Image 1 (cartoon, helix red, strand yellow):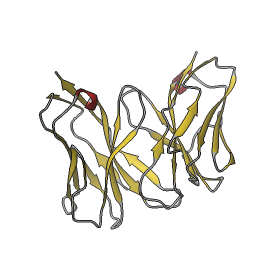
Image 2 (cartoon, rainbow over the protein chains, first blue to last red; image 1 turned 180 degrees about the vertical axis):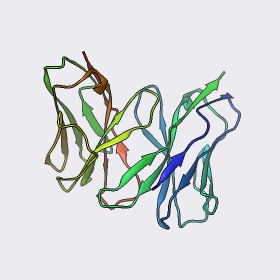
Image 3 (cartoon, rainbow over the protein chains, first blue to last red; image 1 turned 90 degrees about the horizontal axis):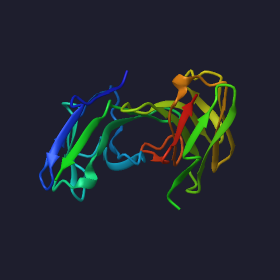
Image 4 (cartoon, helix red, strand yellow; image 1 turned 90 degrees about the vertical axis):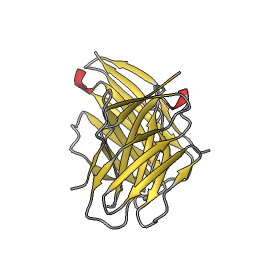
Length: 115
Length: 114
């Protein structure tokens, strides 16, 4: 069975500071993708960043970067220069390879950015 | 067009009503998904359509009936729902059923059953 664990239910950070959200996962597969999705109060689920498991290099998208540790099955998200608009629920997710690929989500972390 | 459009945005229905949720995408994606999301919880997969055929049904009660009339459109027909079915219903799409690159989500329909 594949599972995704986010151990931080809520976090807060001051504007302009850096915050790291943690995620661990469990899988027996070798080829998979990992994702961070953001869901603000507007409720749209937005893809923040994705990582291909066979790529050693950590993915980055502007202020967002990941620390992917494949052996440890860890996939953390670092947000630099936090902005008020980063306030949202963040979900770590794992793509399950089967026909009709299934996206498996962690429980989520509520991030609040304070001014 | 890189969007998934869901209508309506909000829906209130009685337990004896019949209603439908609609999802549309024009990205040429051939896999489409329905998810149910309760407040402060992750989305839970309900159905997967691949090339207009139902490929996954996650043991969803029969009061939810999906339909994929063409490659751009996905409907969810609702009948005799219970108050516990109140939730955010999210639609998503991907290139096809083997695409591992993730989904594009719509903004959801907030359903309240009274």
